[in-house]
Length: 233
Length: 233
DNA sequence: CGGACAGTTGAGGCCTATCAATGGTGGTGG
DNA sequence: CCACCACCATTGATAGGCCTCAACTGTCCG
Image 1 (spheres, each protein chain N blue to C red):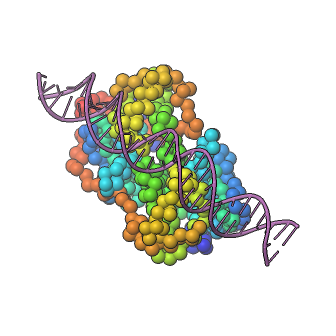
Image 2 (cartoon, each protein chain N blue to C red; image 1 turned 135 degrees about the horizontal axis):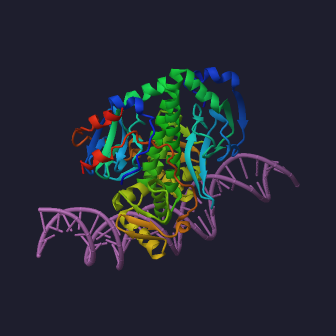
C-alpha cells in the first residue's frame, strides 16, 4: 500500500522534533488513558481507533490511512486506543508542538481547524450509518468509503487492509453479517471479492441513501519514506 | 435553564455584533446545505442537530442545551439541520467573527480547540452507544447523560425537553422501543417517569458497561529513519 | 502433513421494528 | 363547563433482521 510521495509541508517545521517509528500488526500505538504526549502521522499501513467496553465489546471509530494524523484530538489523555491493522510506518510528533505551532502560525491554525471540523463531520456521517442504516447499506457505504479513500478510481482493485472482524467492529455488525452482505453483493454482480481484494463492478448499485464520508484534509507526506519503510517489513 | 456564564464571558468581545433571537417549537434554525454565516449560543430551550436521509430516516446527532454553542463546526455550509425542540432563546454571532477572534486571542483559540476536542470525544462515545449497546443500555446511557447535563444532581426531578420520537432518533431506536425500555426501568424501580418528568431512584442501576482503560503492551522503539528524514530537511 | 487462523455458510433464537389499538393530556370551541 | 379533537405515549401481536452457535473451507507456515 504505497502512495505517491506527495509534497506538502504542513508539518515541516515540526520535523526536527519528530521521529519515525515502525510497528507490527496488532501492536498498540497509544492506549486509552495514556497521557497524550505525541501525535502520529500514518506514513504507511493502516491504524484503527478503537473503543473497548469492559465486557469486551469493541467499536472501531475510525480507520487511519497514509497521510492521516491521529492522537492530536486529546486534551490530556487519549480517549481511544490506536492499534496497527497492518505493519506500520509512523512519523511521531510532540503533541504540544502541534498547538504551539498553531499559536504562532495562522495558516497552520486554520489548517488544524479544518481538520477538526472535517473529523466532526465524518463522525456525524458515521453516526447516521450506525443509527439508521441496515447491514447491507453499512457494508455498501464502507466499500464506497474505502474505494474513495484508497484509490479514488472505481472499477479498480481495492486491497482492504483490515480483516472482517475490524470491518464488523467499524460497522456495528458481526463478522458473519459482514460476510453474508459481501457475498450477496458478489452474487448480485455488484462487486468481485476474494479475501481482501475487492473490485467494484457496478458502482451505482453501491449507492445508498445518505452521504459519503469525506476525508479531505489529509496531510500530504513531507518526505518519501517508502524506501526506508520497505526495510522494516 | 439559564445561559452558562462561562460561555458568555468567552464570547464577550463578540457581543456587539450579536443579536438575540427567539424561535418556536420545531422551527428550523439552520438547514443542512445553507451557507454557514452564523453560529448560535443556546440561551434558553433545547435544540436538536438532525441529519436526514433522503427516504426520510432521521438521526439526531446531538442535543444542544443552554450554554451550548452550535453552527461553528462548519467550513462553508452546515452539514446538519438545527431545529427547536422547545421554544427557544438564542444568541446569534457571526460565524467568521469566531475564527477572527481565535486568530487574535490565544485564550479564545485555546477554548475553541478544547470545545472541538470535547465534541469529537462526545461523538465517539455516541458511536459506541449506537454501534455496540443494546436498547436498554442506550436508554440508560441517555438518562444518565441528560441527568448529568441538566441537573448534575441525581435523585432529583429531570424534565426532559424532548419527546419520545427525538429520543428514539438520538438513540437509533424506534419510539416504541424507547417506551418499552423506559417502562421496564420504571417497573424495576430504577426510575419514576411521567411523560417528560423523570426521577432517577436508583442511579447505580443505570450504570452501564463503560470503556476500558487499556495499557500499552510494549514500548514503541524508535525506528532510525531520522537520518533519512533530516537529509531532506 | 498438520495446525492455526481467517473467511464462509447454515440453522435457530432473540431482539427490535412494524403494524395496530388503546390510553392520556392539552387545547379549542360550543 | 364540558365535549371534542389532535397529539403523544403506551401496550400488544407479529414479523423480520441480525446475532449466536456451529461446522466447514481455504490459506499460510511450521
